[in-house]
Image (tube, rainbow over all chains, first blue to last red; front, top):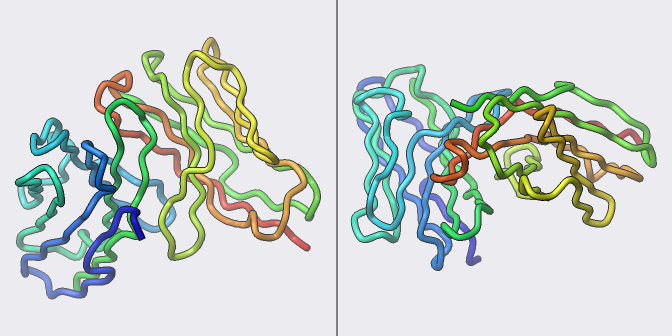
Length: 113
Length: 114
């Protein structure tokens, strides 16, 4: 499968714990996006990278959220001190900056108990 | 920033009928409008998109129309089939498309009855 892949697919964590999710984009894509999707809603934009540069992070939900893309390939999204309200599907997407078409991964479903 | 409204939230049609989903956007600088289909438990899949320099685009049974003056765009599915049942999301490019991130509508749950 040469599409966007995310790991893990599911994560259950206790409130207060830190979690980290990984996204591997389509190899030739230089843009990578993180979205959050809650039940019955459309994906909500969080942050994006062009190559290794994080060019927009003002939409990250709080300072507990951070993302990295150290070598311009895979990316990680970390949530520190998780809260129950963080329970959601976290989606990653990638695109080529000369073409708007964005392709999504299967997402990581986070449950905070 | 951009805001996208989508209607209806649910739509039920008989197999073979047409389905239309409508979206409006707020930022006149938006220039890219994709539609995604999401089946239960699966990733959003890009099914068709349109850019602001085009008024209509077709791909087999699916078509999208764009009215830039009114700032609305629509998805048309003809000859619906049970496998078309899913949640459909419209989206519009944010920041005039300079970043490539999308603002999504809340989705339309389409049910096609055999």
